[in-house]
Length: 339
Image 1: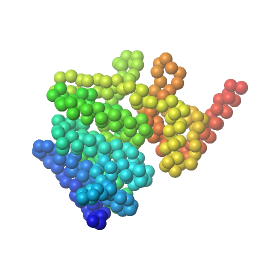
Image 2: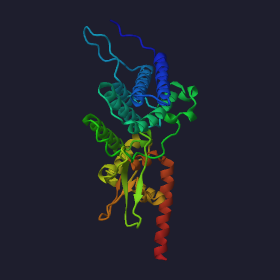
Image 3: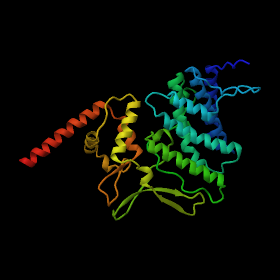
């Protein structure tokens, strides 16, 4: 039996229809099972779009055929892996971050379809919000199809506004009646976000969540906190962020990871400790808690995935300018001491 012919044009058309249906469903004034149906449709839209991109690039979208069984196309998870491997995401966009976003929705979809996902709408929404925006960029880049041509964006909360902060907020606990399966799902999401952030992924491409900061009224100390109001409204759950997870890199590890990612993105300049020192002086990175953290009893800083992403995105030309300004600063400082 020959392998079935698959039209990338039809895949694209059906993908767009699935995403438009998802947005329409989500924005209905009243609807039961809203989150589950929306996620199923969004994942379906992504799966078809990913296969269309692979088909367009001449990549195989079928599993190896088994004797006496029909051909099977790749599941969403496997199609996503292949698109990452073959670098079919838009140039200049963090494909691993996009993949993390879709993976979170796939995990929710699997639980909703095969069991149930309780009431986790407030957790799913940030991923849906960002997924729509990621999808629009993907379809524009790969197929020159703009989702916005078919809808009135300003009337749709699901796709109305891009995220502006990296991920710092996650509901601390599910409702007390939630099943173990749901609690496992929350833990998987936390792990997914931690891994993406530690890798230096563009967290704005993963989920549109919130950055919460609290500071002592007496300004004795400050700390990043993860804050959530329990659904029943009975308590506020506060969890201090663990710098071992949010800021896992020494300066040497930071520079090594930045150089590896810059090389893969086509940037030629290899950064050194001097470049890092110059950038810290110029842009006060050590004062930015999203980038750096230092224990009160330590003299060295540790660095976050945000610092990786930030340093990767800077152009070679800007690094040269910062090095020059820092060199002049050191010379002036040395001259002032002698004088």
